[in-house]
Image (cartoon, helix red, strand yellow):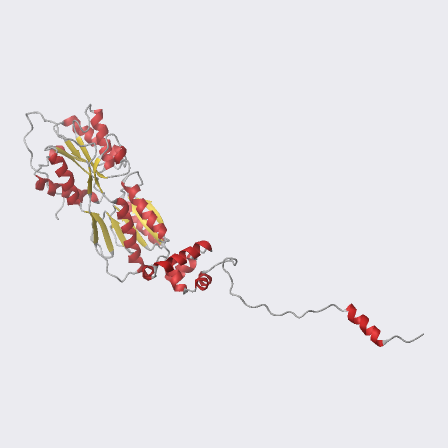
Length: 389
């Protein structure tokens, strides 16, 4: 027997071993956020070849975002939407020391004035990345004092007040819609009430109305005195006398047509020696028209009615309501814009008051005055103003 061949054994061993291939390193590539998760601020900035600061300004709609080119802002927003990027609210709060929440204090939540106003407020807050708490005090003094404290304990960045006056100062920026107190750190969003009264009274005067009933709002509503004083001033300018026996005052806290119904019902039970009513708002005007009908009279054939605000239902009531229009949606938007600027840039100067112009909406609830009885009561002394200008 011949001895084994060493070369043959080596060949067998080589066949038994696994074949090892040399692997070349893969070329490095920039990660694609469209296939990588999660997407954060840094990744989005690298993807767009922009700075994280630019991304942050655009995504948070910060005041500095307006200085960024529109095309760049569009690129950022489109990429964020495509990649499902959302800013981290906790990280943002820690970085900016803001909670991105706002406290909104209103008298009530009924349909009408506050509904339209809140639409403008909510839309702009949402677009700006802010959430909000809304509380209703129903005219109760204890709640007017307590709600600001409760909202401050939740670290809101600012306050929006609607037809509400605070009794104590707060540490956060404040914007007041239909507010009239001059307080440091507060901007009042107001309507030109004298112009509003002039539009309404001149319309009634031109229709031949000389004996007009007037309705004043509740004492706790901040607009009441200012609107009333506007009426007093403009009545004299137009050439109208305001008769005390034709003035009614809303005492109820109701926020429905019931607001205007009982005061006009009671007025009609005392006298019908007037041809028009200037109501405090549209809701009370709708109640007044119901009281006129229940007394067997017709609006506007017997008594014309003019409202205030131009709420959504005013144009659909029967008859369609003539009213003084407040630009409520725009007032809400400007209030939010002003508050957010105060929050984000507190050292800048801001106006104490922003005034909006009213508009008269002439519809079906006013018409030419009917003839009064030939024997009319003797004129009364004019009603004094409620406050000094």
